[in-house]
Length: 180
Image 1 (cartoon, rainbow, N blue to C red):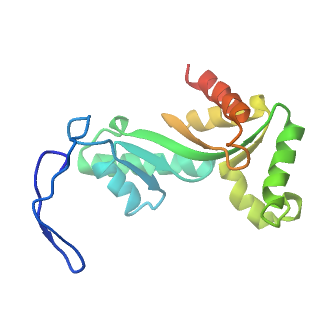
Image 2 (tube, rainbow, N blue to C red):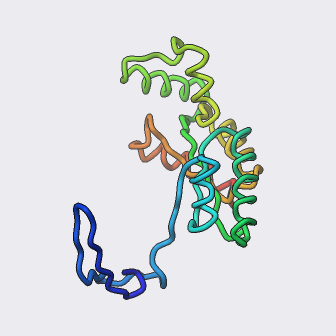
């Protein structure tokens, strides 16, 4: 439908006859495709075949490995990995000071009936590779280390206070320093 085709589909639950997409996409060929995940056998192979953007999951130790696996799949399908915009999702708890950021993190967990300080080591260990808590310098250094692994960008999630325009501006300042 993105290429002005009019497909007909006869499925088990749905039928579509001569479907069309109006208005047509702004970009020729349709919108860019982002595939997110970390499965090395299927998801990363699908990224190599179809994705314009790949959003990888995991901590710094995992991301480097996933990029290597993606590069192998790209080689298998005859595609240059440089043609794929590689990103990673990071959960950011940011404030002007580390103490304030830690308070934000604690309030985030408290609102869910938990406490960061009371989480067991295994739970913290599963979250920490994808989450940074701190002041702008701490967050910037952490995100910069991710970019140094070969990522083209970072997807930042501000789960605790992303509704606050000042926090969004602060995170934006940190990220803009990394990419300028």
